[in-house]
Length: 311
Image (cartoon, helix red, strand yellow):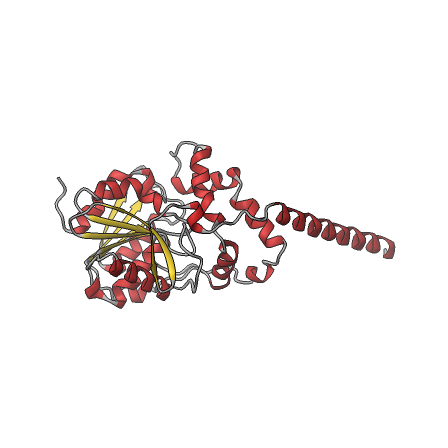
């Protein structure tokens, strides 16, 4: 028995040494993979609260709309929706840090995200915008409405119930280098892994994504400081508001949901709509990333929420 235990111990130790050496070697071989955001995205950027925020914009006249993405979503996901809304509105989509091409500077809390969104809107002279939050961004929209109801014209929650997402925070203590950095780079640079996750988010009817599309999703993970920023998020979990707080929202609200969403169930959206005393709009044929699956229907729902009449 002692001999077998000794052999098992030696085997485990040898495996650990091999993994450590391989991890150090991989990290060294991929060193330089992370780059400043300005080398990966041409802009535009706006600096608020000492944080450089990447954004995109459409339209030059009409009432303002601010689009806030969710977890790991770069602002380009709003391209089609933004273009449609831009014919009648001034539309801005921003990269919520630590996602997209915004600077990796925390804290990554709901209060700080609200401050950044309000500051970006002020810098770009968007007065009382309609705030649209997708997934994680839904909590930002609700928190902004609660903090300054007079500062927004209304909110739209798209595929997001605004509630906090808990998690195994103890995993943050296991995110030890060099293993964590190696694993992060492997996962976020793998077409197979990213494509599998993306297919789940797009819904059952989504076509296979091209390599070029997958690269667009993978590129923001190369922004300097991203692994460390994600570790901070892992430590605290994804923030949100409570159902009780939803009942205190006093601005016009709308909840819009992909009918085939398997990431956040439509039932969760309907519960949030009831708490907000808001209408619920189901988008047929769309998954969690409804702005990509059915952009025309999503834009039409946002248009109605803006108070404008669609043509």
